[in-house]
Image (cartoon, rainbow, N blue to C red; front, side, top):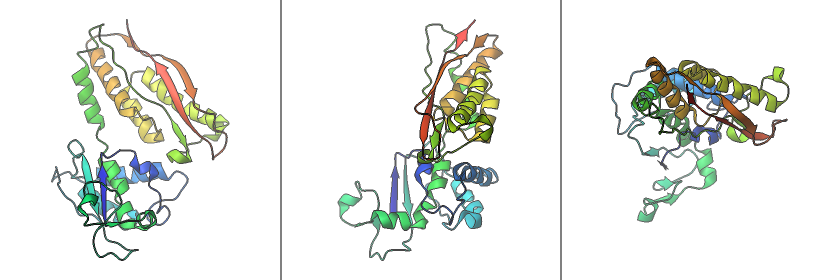
Length: 276
């Protein structure tokens, strides 16, 4: 089989779940657990062959081969990778030639078979690489956030310059594969608000290290976490030069109030940085 990922989206891991419980964890909190596993395996290996132009990696259950696959995916350079081709064997369908699940320029050659949606969903040789490719394509590390924060730090000194950080906060519910719930906070939407406001409070403290630790601990699905991290590191550089700043949040809202496990919601927050 042949799978093409084009213009790869780093949150693709959120929608890949056909082999939960057989190839990787199926607990209620599978996404943060899987994310932690991938981070753990990748942190234990070295990037000695970057940038890789091709890799070979296994497709068995992660408990068996996850640590092995990390050695290959550690060699992927997300800063230059724009298109990913995943080639895997067919365990469920008899093929006389390669098959495609995404159709574009390769399909126009007339050399490929059409892979049905059911075959695509059944085939673990393809799916088992999607979480790793998603993780490998997380392009902005903490060190990069610091690097870009330092790079941008000369611009806010000019009062005619404005930085706009685009971000929603928690994406909660089954469709986002994120169901954090602290029963001590009451209803689900109260728990989500408490989670968001923990992160908002850290941003108000202008503390990039604590914000990074908060994300590692709670895995809150803040889609603008990297732009926010760049801004906080930008502010840290300015503070080193004696600038006095504050960043209060002015409003918080949710698209809906979650009360049961079938609900979903997205959180929103608005704040402003001032220089004193």
